Amino acid sequence: MDATDVLLLIDQARPAPRPLWGEPRLNASSRKRSGRMPAVRRSVTLPQPSSDPTVLPTLAAEPSPKPAASAGPDPLLVLQQLAAAVASAIPPASPPQDPLAVARGLEEAARLRVWLSVAELAALLRLSVGTVRGWSSGHCPRPGVVLERCKQGGVVWWLVRVES
Image (cartoon, rainbow, N blue to C red; front, top):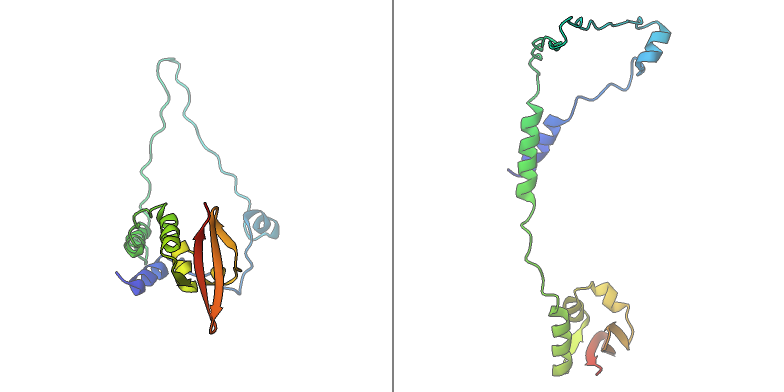
């Protein structure tokens, strides 16, 4: 099931739009006041209690009238198909990331004394490139880690130093 099928299911489940013109939308009390709907009193007849205290009154269950066949699809079926389409579109959960991966990467970069580009440092720290671009030399992304910034030929490079 692709995206067009999902959109088709959503359109089928959407109720028919109400017209924007014609009769104003009135609630029951305002229709009564305007004379468009007469006040109707409804009464419910309860079964009379039996003289025998061991007999509990029972209400006869009347068979409910079957709803008229609707012109549209069954809403429950549409909802199930929509849920299946959404579930198939969601990618499976990725395995949890190693919480020490960033610390190991910083320690390795400091040990190798390699200069990292802005994109490389951003990927190592799992941050956006724009965040790293805003830092100045001497920034500490973690306690005990200091970044040294160097700009050569319009390109910014970072050296990671670990303080002991």
